[in-house]
Amino acid sequence: MGGSYLWFLAFIFVYYLVAKPLERADPFLVPIIALVLALIAPDGDKYFERILFLMSLFFLGSAVSYHLFHIEKILDSSLVWWLTPFVAVSALVTVRDDLNFGPFWVSVSLFGFLFFAAISQKLESSAISRPIIWIGKRSIVFYVSLALFIIVICKISELSGLNSYAFVGAASAVISLSGGWVLAKGMERWSEFKYLFTLPALNFSDFSGFPRRE
Image 1 (cartoon, helix red, strand yellow):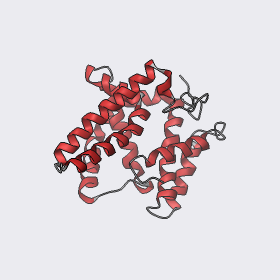
Image 2 (cartoon, rainbow, N blue to C red):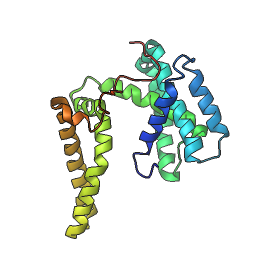
Image 3 (cartoon, helix red, strand yellow):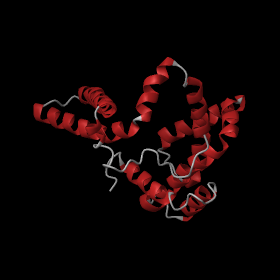
Image 4 (cartoon, rainbow, N blue to C red):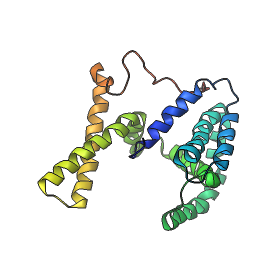
């Protein structure tokens, strides 16, 4: 029911269910309709405003895949760096005033996407990005398993009388990432590991909603 940081996985599952019957629709029409519905939805409603707003962003990502040439030109342009002050101020306001994301702040999201996508594109070929890209391609493994490792670590710390937030936090980061790495490598080497994350005989890894243009 979305009681942890994994709430967005339920949202994404809904989006994939919606994507299949809409794959013949105009790819830009779906995010526009979802955004309009989010704007008229009750403010702050998680299963109305938020799910529709994030749906608009989810399908927008699919829509822009039809225009990769134009998007790449924008990201390569020096004009995108003019967004730096806007992104910096948005980040400061978000931290200081607890600004929440939502349909009325869609410009913050869109400008942020362009800005950080441009940075990511610049760093994509660097050595420091390789482990991040490797984790990103296996993100579902890390997302799902992180919570399990952290819960176990917290329970062990509680039973052992350890109450150091720094120690538990550091142990959670190291052990959960290491555990995710073991599971991800296991999926590459042993088919049995795949059943932890893939339904037997039903592989959804190639399903991406709207067909993409390579």
